[in-house]
Amino acid sequence: MSINQTKRLVLMAEDELTNFSTMARKIQKLQQKIALSVPLAEQQEVKKNLEEELPTGGFARTVETQRQAVALPFWGIAGLGLLLGISMNQPGDLLLTGGGVIAAWTLQKWGWQLQAKRLVVATLDSIEGRIEEEKHKVAKSKEAAGKE
Image 1 (tube, rainbow, N blue to C red):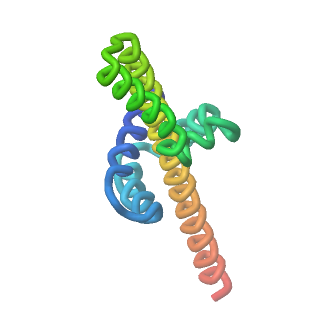
Image 2: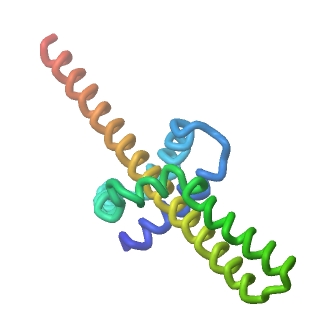
């Protein structure tokens, strides 16, 4: 159940990434959706799974934050292969085009998925923070009521 729930939440985050808004607004909108549709125990399980799955550094982190810049050389290779293949009538160069397009598209898709997973983790962190804040408020009010 948790794997399906994880995929569903990542798809929700990918959908939210398509909207032009701040990260705080995206988290706020996802909080409402997640809080209503996913029980707290499953939220914690999904968060644990995603944190284990997400890379912490290196090339993957660069792809996540700069996916378009990482894919740009491959788009260039694809364009150059297309240009040379057409202008010099070299069908072999068209293979270069296909390879460049596939590499660029794969890198951008991977970066998009990593960014969506990171957004889900940030949203779940925010939900946990709000829950802890509410617990703290309730404890303070009970303490104040007990002193009266």
